[in-house]
Length: 131
Image 1 (cartoon, rainbow, N blue to C red):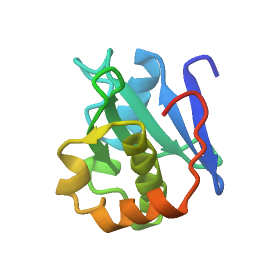
Image 2: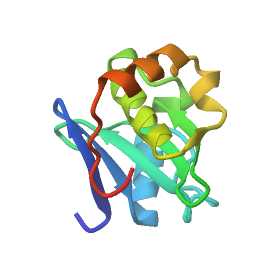
Image 3: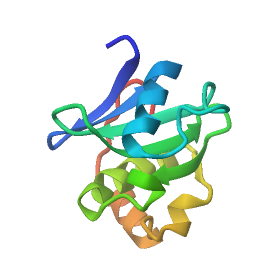
């Protein structure tokens, strides 16, 4: 679609970057959080979609400042366990590109330093179109 860009496809899931305020509104409605609300129009928002294009995780980033501010599952909760490996890989790739994780990555306990280090050493990460 023209309102999103596929960043990475992996095991029946795909990371997409949401490009329009309308799609960010849909993301917030489906996920039960504030993405799409006022103040998110200019944010870099990534979403983990299943093979039916349903959202399961939302990541708020600032691509220019190379920071990740939020990593949210539904209702602002921690992403459910089955989607956490995809989140860890996304974050590890971002860290390889110089991104810093602020807040949620550490606060929700999902990103464990040894897990990221293991991924950095053992995994070849190939993301298209940047992050």
